[in-house]
Amino acid sequence: MSRRRAARPPRLELPGLDGVAVCGGSAPAPPPGRPRLPGPLHLFSAPDGEGAGHDLDAGRANEAPSPSGAQQIEVQEAGPPGGGCGGQSPPQKPRRHLALAAPGVARWAVWALRFSPLVAAVGEDALVVEVTGGVHLFGGEARLLRRAVEGLARHGVAAVGVVAGAPGTALALARAGVAGVVPAGREEAAVEGLALGVLPVAPEIVTALAQMGLLRIGQVRRQPRAPLARRFGAALLRALDEAVGAVVAPLSPIRPPVAFEAAREFLEPLITREAIDGAVAALLRALCRKLELAGRGARKVVLRAHRVDGAVQEVAIGTGLPARDPAHLGRLFAEKLDRLAPGFGFERIALGAEVTDPMQGLQAGFVRGAAQREVLSQLFDRLGQRVQLWRLAPAESHWPEREVVRICPNQPVAIPPGWPWSPRPARLLRRPLQVTAVALLPDAPPSLLRIGRQAHRIRAAEGPERFEPEWWRDRPDRLARDYYRLELATGARLWVCRLGFGAEARWFVRGRG
Image 1 (tube, one colour):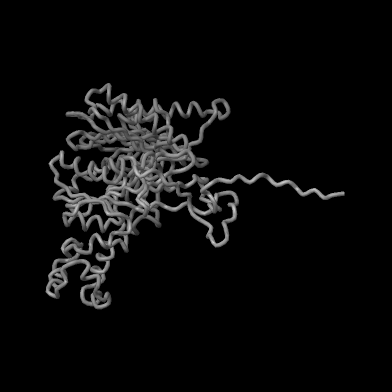
Image 2 (cartoon, rainbow, N blue to C red):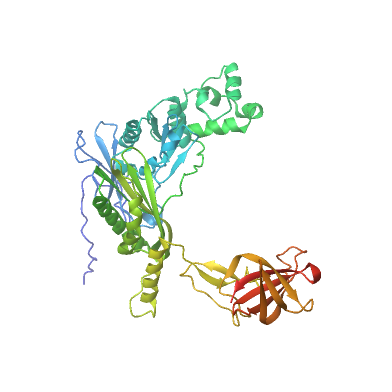
């Protein structure tokens, strides 16, 4: 009886793909003497590069020149969100920064928010914009640079723009008047021939180095670092390292970056209120979709409208509870949009949720009172755009002016058992009214109360209620108080207190009722 060998699956012979590592599977064994290719798959296109740069369904394509002169396209398979092949993290994109230098260009920092939410003003003559990950939205670094420079030129600002990997490199080149795009890894060569005056160092240091014959950044970098640090301090070495990209200086954005934002630019500027309302409604729908996917709700939404003359106008709304209903947020914006002055029109409108909170969807009918709470919160939001809303909550104090605090009307209130400890007026006077009182005995309730020039006889009195100072909060010499509830002959009821005792006692009216 003959033995049958187990059948193997047929091997597909793919020409040109020998030795390519495939994520998630095993690769065919390479021929003897030929190393295995661990990296991505490389395809070669025609010399004219036709079809290069297009998005692929399975990954992304990056165009790069090959030694043979043809266009080389590096195709990387799209891996899972958590990492690449074998659980490894995907490579991070190199950081890129745009620097704009011109006298007084710092005034246009808000205008530059159209390119990135991370905009920092460096002095009065420079702006740094981190454009990492957003260059493709403008068609590449060269187009982004040209758009920024031309946009400032339309407003009368002749700026020099540079795109580089490190902000210090871009700043040094821009302040030196050298415009362009610095490829990644070429920062040191780009700034080697610049004068030392472009560095953020004291003029005395630049003069001292010039007397030594060191006029360029490259000349100083070729000197031993230890003697330079001893004579000129560590600030010079740090400025040199920042200029060549060895050290990346932290940026201080003019505004904290917004996690959820929706923006739109217009070929024709928006002037009419109907066009502005339509654009805001579309942006609100896009913003709320992002919030819903992230499970968040907006507490503060800011609208920034960029006019064609470079001015930026802002309108902000707030909500008591997290919200992501476009109709509700649109009603809150409806009245505040009247404050916008379009002038010759808005060329860009952006909506950003600057404050957000977690928000989970609730199915109607399963949570008691959820619908009523949401409707009440929306009513508070609409009223809050016109007047200030608040409610009172108990505080940990027995002094009348401290025992309640103002809180948000949507915030729940926990009332301790037995609070309030004794009857109180509904409202206290903002400033206690000092009066004169006459009592039969030093510790007895007053029998006559003089308010201004009028004397009022006391029909009934209740008290005293003693309030001792809070030793953990008040100063040691603070006096105790005695409070009385008085009913005048006219029927009015007052809440008065006595500060001190004996002949030095003073009387004050704190409230009515």
